[in-house]
Amino acid sequence: MKENNNHIIALIPAYLDNQLSPKEKASFDSHLGGCEACAEELSRFISLFRSFEEEPVQMPTDNLRANFLEALEKEKGAQDKVVFQNTSETKNRWIRPFLKVAASIALLFGAFMLGSYQQRQESNKDIALLETESLHMKQTAMLSLIENQSARKRIQGVNFIDQFENPDGSVINALTERMLIDPNTNVRLTAVDALSRFTRSDTVTSAFIKALSTEKNPSVQIAIIENLVRNQESKAIVPMRKLMEQEDTQPFVREEINSVLSEII
Image (tube, rainbow, N blue to C red; front, side, top):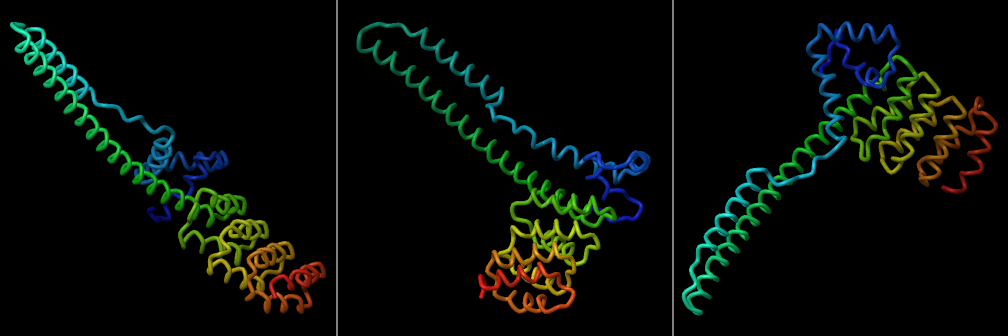
């Protein structure tokens, strides 16, 4: 994705999701009319997602079907012209064209199957390429939203994790950063929830443990503790005890830690 302060590429996801205010949308449309780069990126987003709406059914080409029917008619015509003279000769003359027709059908059928197989292989390659491009664009859209100035849009970006079955390191790092440093409590809490499905990752576990020493909001603290306990993370015992000893730790947070420590000791 192009990086330029004059471009509005980062707003494309919100634009397509009708999340822009009337003023923002007007500004977006105005910029789009004079910026070929942004218009091209918008077109790519739209066409890519439309391409997944319906996968075409692979059918034999018209040329292959026409060639098959033409060859079949020729063989039938040749068979009709056979003159039967005696039993032995009649039998031989009947068998030969029949075998030729059968051989032609077998060849055409083989050609059709080979062509169909090749079409499927090409189609699979195209689909894999589209899926890769789609994943890249989804990732770009997510990371753009996560960096947005609006807390609501950052939450929208964090929730975009549902689009990824196996997110790469850049996505995980972006989520852990939101959990650790985002100024909005709801964004941090949403990031904890998003990361909770990746607790087997050392990166995520380390981020949860680090957050115990920096997080001040009780709700976020409880959410982090629950994830560490669920994962039976013994490395969390020391920072959890330190959190209990801090004067500004809420009583119900201390009670929560005290009740769950035995589960991981």
